[in-house]
Image 1 (cartoon, helix red, strand yellow):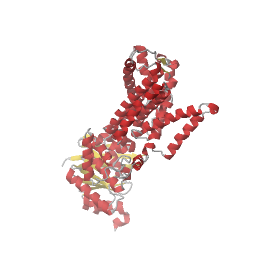
Image 2 (tube, chains in turn cyan, yellow):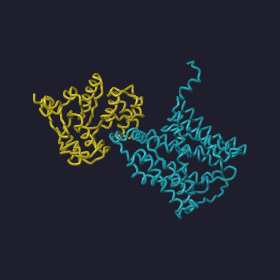
Image 3 (cartoon, chains in turn green, yellow):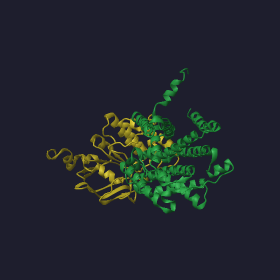
Image 4 (cartoon, chains in turn orange, blue):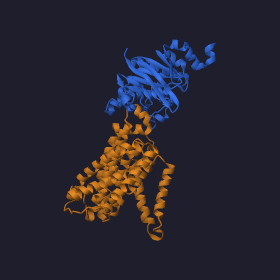
Amino acid sequence: MARTALVIGALAAIVYPIPLQLQGTTYYQTVGFLVLLNAMLGIGWNVIGGWAGQFDFGPQVFFGIGAYTAALLYVKLGVDAWLGLVGGVAVAAVVCAVLTYPLTRLRGHYFAISTVAIWMIVQPIGSTWEYIGAAQGLFIPVKTHSTIVGAALALQFSGPTKALGYYYSALALFAVTLALMAWVERSKLGFYFRAIRDDQEAAEGIGIDSRLYKVIARSITAAVFAGGGVLYAFWALSVFPEQVFELNWSTLPIMATVVGGIGRLWGPVLGAAILIPISQIMSTMLGTGPLAGRGIDLIVYGLIIVVIAAFRPTGLLSLPWARWVRLERPAAA
Amino acid sequence: MATLLRLESSTKSFGGLLANRDVSLAIEAGEIVGLIGPNGAGKTTLFNCITGYMHPDAGRIVFDGHDITHTRPERICHAGVARTWQVVRAFGRMTALENVVCGALQRTNRIAEARARARELLEFTELHGRGDMPAATLTLADKKRLEIARALATRPKLLLLDEAMSGLTPIETAAAVTLVRRIHDEMAVTICVVEHVMEVVMPLSHRVVVLDYGVKIADGAPDAVVRDEQVIRAYLGERRAHR
């Protein structure tokens, strides 16, 4: 049952952009790209926020660190995007571990506030440090590739297949993230994270080093955000401090996780698949015409999130889907 | 018999309140020791000091030859001490089985092996059949058993039970006493129980230690301790002791 759903979902994700591409549109591929990117970030945030139960409002710091690392490697040393991705992920995970260890002395609201504080410290550094381009940021020069394979290997798509290429790149990174986190969830790490979330003292009493495992959880989150940041940098062909350290890189994935189902592997996937298209529909429907420019689209978007959060705080995945799906079938057997 | 745990003049104060004053005691391997005393006598503080949640202001705690006076809780667990809690601390959103798996993972990295061990322990604590239930939905008696199963999964040499039987019905209490005896006999675990219910501690314990206002006032065989004048005074008050 779950396996069939997975296969159908995977096929749908692979086939989805093909008819659109044949029609010559690119808009929906970009929407798909944003859904996958935010779903991937949500899966990453779920590790620290959903499993380990520590509210982290500053993962966009590592989104930026990943983007900057890969862009710098590319611009200054000519290192390819995919190698840059490995570098960005590694740098973000290490920086996160060093920054987070002292924070793990704090709990609850205080931990959450400290993650915001680090973000506030990082922003001015990003916009004043000359070596990384300061406020001007970094531009990633395009090298045109004659073959699609060459473009894929360099993570640089251009022309009419640009949106399609980044859609499939995002799909690949999303799939890798999902598979890795599915493994983490079932491993010792997954058990320890949830034990710390449910009762930190009791977890320590059965031999779990709560500070160490909180650091591991947040570094995993940071690694996923860094991967997303690298993808975004090569999609946008630039890295600006206000752009990569933007608050939306944490609020959207967090909202997707909460709406879909916090602490559930597929929660952020469902949440992103609902929220991102709604925000796009809202801005195309209400963002133009007589009501344009008054933020009506954002108000309606916000209301939808409030309604879901108020009526199902444990997320849409926590609804009794299994019972409903079975109800549709004839009760013959 | 070898001494498993030794406290040397352990002292702990909270501001002006001396919760433990110069408490010295030893637990021998293979014993069941009862730790009793009126409310506020410092029993839980003593447990917290032994398990590393608090550190004594003065004195020394030695477990199995290692000084654990200033060691963190998870290290003390690795050394072989496990505990349960006066107010239950089950991992509420995980299933009963997963709770015990977390404990078993201290001694193995393989999930399948930890699961198998956890199933054995759920069987041992008579919680099989509740393995897939979220721990938060269990009854108090079952939560207390679950805590014991989770603690046993870490393969302790010394098990500290903090009021494992308080708040239970007489039938549940009797079952819990049987469980503690079985842990001692079948798993060869040394046990220290904090308990209010005298009818439970006295027949269960080989030796009883009494705390009052943070000071150890008696240490000996149960039948000697119940006749001790200081103990009677602590529990029943001045007038009765003089009668």
